[in-house]
Length: 296
Image (cartoon, rainbow, N blue to C red; front, side):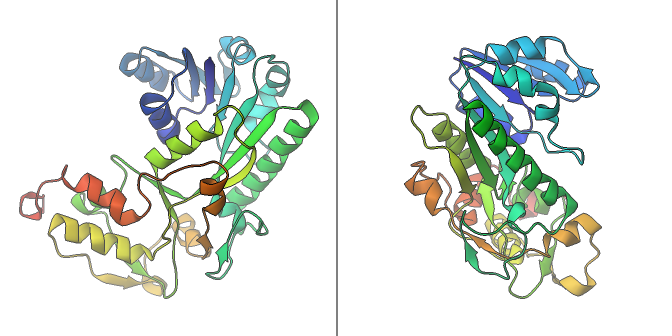
């Protein structure tokens, strides 16, 4: 078994280091410095450079011999970079069948707080999510053309070790921005890893799956609960209208929806380790010092 990963980012690295059972693992990074750091920290992972036009020559050979492919690289305005440079190599990989593409629930756009599932229309309201829809369509068309099995995982907001509300509070970066009725979907990185593992299982169904927890929630509630776990007073609420946000951060609030994970559980058979943000944050709480010892 040989796994090739386009994009050794946060989610892909968690999968590889905690759940992947492949004999060979090769993945791409965007800088020579990152490649070196991956090799030093994880000698079993072959890290290669892919940041066009810089492309390590061994990539095509490794793709050709891969049995499993994970794509975790965001699309560009010109299209999906993996298909742009390696479509032929992937199509000709004789032993490669499962291809898992990591996308985002952002492709749905705004559904005014309604519950939606994978049958909902994709109505992206940003250029980056529009590019995701185009990339998804391109991968599905590639699968239809080549006979390769394509599974698209639409991820909710990712959190996990080193990247969560407790860390933001400790670093004094957390803000409780309130927009009435607004909810966001979340997913723990461990549950992303479980889902990738399920998608790579022989005879697993292909298609599109929402990867989100059971409880979309207002962002201010998450911060308040994290503060409670740390025994500290939560930051004051800030009305959305007066919040100092970057254009990208503000754009997240333009989409409001409750995303269902029923298909994830019923068809892929995924059992979530952290079905709510409370379960996920509580698991991290023991790693943090009490509020009295936090920097002020």
